[in-house]
Amino acid sequence: MSRCDGIAGSLDACAHLGVSLYVRRPSRRRRNGRPGGGAVGAPTAAQWQGEGIEFRTARLIRYQSRRAILLCAVFLCATLAAALFAPLRAAFAADQKNRLLNGDFAKGSEDQPDLWRTEAWINNPESFQAHWHSYTDKPSELEVDNLKPNDGRWMQPLTVPAGWYQISVDLRTENVGAKESGATISVMEDGIMSADIHGTTDWQRVTLYLKVGAHGADIDVALRIGGFGSLNTGKAFFRNASMVRIDGPPPSATPTYDLNVIRKQAAPVPIGSPISLALTYVALAAMAWAGWRIFGDDDFRIFSTLRAAMSGRPGKR
Image (cartoon, rainbow, N blue to C red; front, side):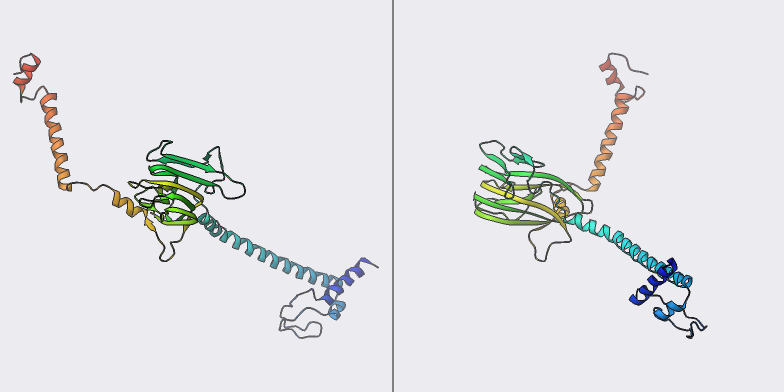
């Protein structure tokens, strides 16, 4: 069998299997005894047999070229769509990222987890102790133990961009006093804290919602027993701490805080009015000028006698 016969047989098989999706261009001329003027389907086996091998080969190449162009177009569209949606996926992943570093307390050494530090209002071993409990079969934990009335905590400083944040932690307590501030997750800023837990409790998750202004903020997140001016005793254990950016708090969510509003309320209020401030600057400038003229210029005649007596030399005439 010649090579041409092999090619013809292959083309016949392709035609019988319906591989070709070739659409003939409309033509005003009659082609193969059929009038033009409309699109037709794939050529039949008889048409394949009636045409020359070269023409059939050209038609097959044309079909394969069109199919390759179509596949390339589909590939380019898919690539473009992936490129367009990649920033959205990255932004979503960034929003879901835990801003607290080592929030699962899995990393550390001895009795110290990485990236966390301890503080207390009364920071001595008789009043405050803190421990890191590292486990392989369950989540690791941080412990705060206020042996005496205290404000003790684990802390982490953060710089965060603008937006709403959900700040949460799992905690349980042992013998936390009922009167003063209990165990919370807090931001060290004028009473920003979750619901406080007292007594002896099992694990539960506590949450607060914080809005950070347009310029971002530096904050300290604390896992804590007690508060400012509200010292308490007892133990608290914390695990799975997180700070996640969100679109906004759920309806009726509590507690919610606006950091900018809180900081403006805590800022000292200036005393006086702008007019009194301006008069003060004018008086200070006048005093400075008079002092320079009296004590810094030998040609100034005011108090010249007194200056001559103090210096032990006659005054200028």
